Amino acid sequence: MASTSAAVCLGRALLRRFAPRRLPALNRPLCSSNQEPHKDTTAKRSALRPGPSSTHDWIGPPNPLSNLRPIVYHIPENETELEKRLRHLRQDTEDWNQDFWANQNITFSKEKEAFIVSHLQARGLGLRDEQGRRRSLNSKEMAAFYKSFLDKNRTRHANYNKEWYRRNFSITLLMARVALSSMWRRVTDRSSSRKSGAPPG
Image (cartoon, rainbow, N blue to C red; front, side, top):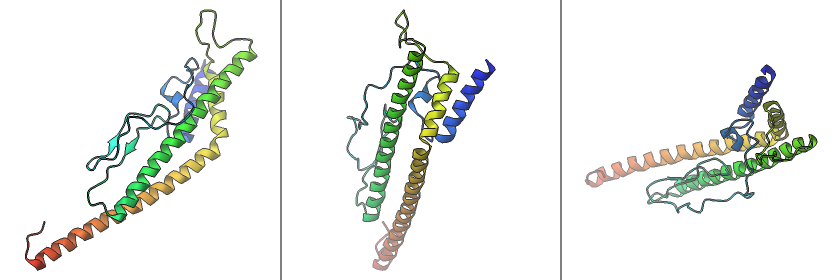
C-alpha cells in the first residue's frame, strides 16, 4: 500500500515539475484508465469563436483538447502601428499555445491508451471485463507510464518553455513601448492644447 501511494506521489510530482500546463488526465484521478480516449485527433478552433471586438477581449470556455481558454484580443479604435504589432504577437502566442497543448494532449491520450491496452494484452485480458466494464491499471503501473511520457517529451517541453519565455519577454517589451508611447502622446496633446488655448481633452 505504501509503495503504491509513493508511486502515485512520484507521478504527481514529476507531472507538476515538467508539465507547465495540465494534461487531460490530470483533471481526473491518476489511475483513470477507465476513461475513453479522445475521438478527435486534430486540434480545432472553436466554432463559437467570435471576431475581434472594438472594446473587450473575448475569453471562451476551455478548449476540450488543449484545456486552455481561448482568447481573442480586441482591436482598439485608432489603433497605432505599435499597438497592432502587440495585438498580433499576443494573438499569435495564444494560438501557438493552444496548438501546442492540443497536440501534446492528443499524443498523451493516444500513448496512454496504447500503454493500457498492451499491459492488459500481456496478461491475456481484453479492454473490457465480463460485465462490459472497462478494465484499468493500478497506480504503480500508471505512474510508470507518466514518468516514461515525461522523460520522452523532456526536450519538447524544454523547447516549449524557452519559446514561451521568449514570446512573453517580447510581449512585455512591446507593452512597455505601447505604454510609453501612449503616455508621450497624452503629454504632447496637453502641451499643444495649452499653446492653442483650448482646454485639454
